[in-house]
Amino acid sequence: MKNEYLLDRKVRQARWDEPLLFERSNPGVLAHQVPKLEQEIQDAFGSLDSIIPKSMKRESAPNLPEVSELQVVRHFTRLSQMNFSVSLGTYPLGSCTMKYNPLINESAASLSGFAWLHPHQDLRQCQGALELMWELEQWLAEITGMDAVTLQPAAGAQGEFTGVMIMREYHRCITKECEQRHEMLIPDAAHGTNPASAAMAGYNVVVVPSSDEGLVDLDALKESAGPNTAGLMLTNPNTIGVFEKDIAEIAGIVHDAGGLLYYDGANFNAIMGVVRPGDMGFDVVHLNLHKTMSTPHGGGGPGSGPVGVNEELAEFLPVPRIIKEEDGTFGLDYDLPRSIGKVKGFFGNFGMLVRAYSYIYSLGYQGLHRASEVAVLNANYVAYHIRKIRGFSLPYSQDDPRMHECVISAEKLKDDTGITAMDVAKRLLDFGIHSPTVYFPLIVPEALMIEPTETESKQDLDRLISAFQTISDEAYSTPDIVKNAPTSTALRKLDEYRAAHPKTLTLSWKMHLEKNEE
Ligand SMILES: *Cc1c(COP(=O)(O)O)cnc(C)c1O
Image (cartoon, rainbow, N blue to C red; front, side, top):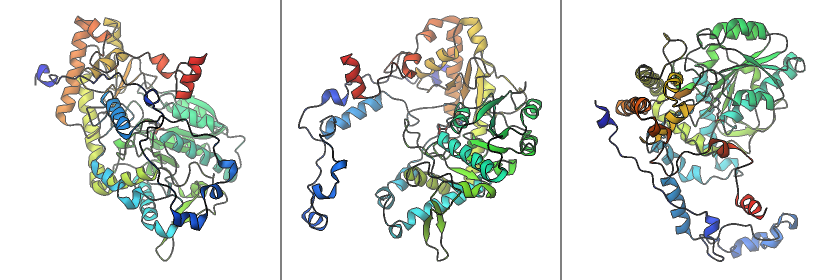
């Protein structure tokens, strides 16, 4: 197929000069009116004044924008038109598994029996929800090869923190070497959340270098593992997208040293129904339901990072545990004296659990297996073609197939033309394709981490490859086009530093007012 055909889709993002809702605020305008307390409720419980303790009453109304419902709807619709989503186009953001979120998940989650449940509802009235969570725990345990699962953590990073706390509790209560085992081994290719979670749990991070193949260096691991080792955190396939073929030996080295193995399940999309972390020797696992199980990635919003553990660690899981009673009803067990406690209110992000349940239920074992096969096929197809394009290469393990993602280097492109991985990523936006993850993992210079996922069609993959080809051609002939990209988006190239720095970010209306006063 010719490039022109593949890339002829014109992309123009809307550009609204959209003020904040606060700037639109008009005193007295309402989007919603709360009904007056009904007489029967007042008669039963008394007036609001008598129900709400004085100490919990506000002095004044909260400072919220006063706008109509239509103003709110238009505001967010306009903002959405200036955004990019997996519903709009290819979103190959490596490590993040931006797969399509099937609509059937949404209809399941909006069933009123699920959507309107209150977390404080009487257990007799939410047996269905408890059964769903109990069953999802069983399924995730089966898929990962673990013995017990908690659904409580709200993100992968929180799952990691939960898992590391469980490892610490194990060393405190079982090996009784908690003080001495203060080191967490983490490969240099790891996701930044791994060292962050370990450090939050009080561990010193020991970095394990990668070998020339981009795998865990076994000699370095042997040197690092010892009486101070609490455990190793690892993702397999790793962030290069290559399967750690020595995983059995890695597990042996860490276990022999008295440590535990933590599996970062963010890359689980590569191996569903093919191989299980439990069988590879891992003791603790987290999954990202918002990656692998097709629940949406909120913009910092609801995610879900369930944690699975082997039998020996089950007593340390967060409370409450969901239990099935002998009479078949479901209940909650808070009576776990060695539990690490709670990591999140109630039971986790329940709506995400319904969506993940719906996904697993609709695909079944065969479907999950097939999804991983196609995810791997798609990543290898993309890697095979893009590595041949001028300026790009596929570093590490040339002969090993990639799993669900591939890391391309634009180092040669940069040396030849001055065009960086960041420039390439920005130019892709002009073709209606989201940027891949850039500059991660840190061990690859000018890294572009591409994860197409199984939900992209061959046509979409060909468009992605064509876009890389076109950008390469432009870089060697008219580099300014690439340097100045994107031009078709609502906003042009952003200042990455300002966009990420707490000193320059204005995160709330209150902060905005305070800054303006200064
Ligand atoms: C996404 C990711 C995480 C963290 O998960 P969040 O849900 O974003 O907190 C951890 N490790 C890897 C490899 C990831 O890709």
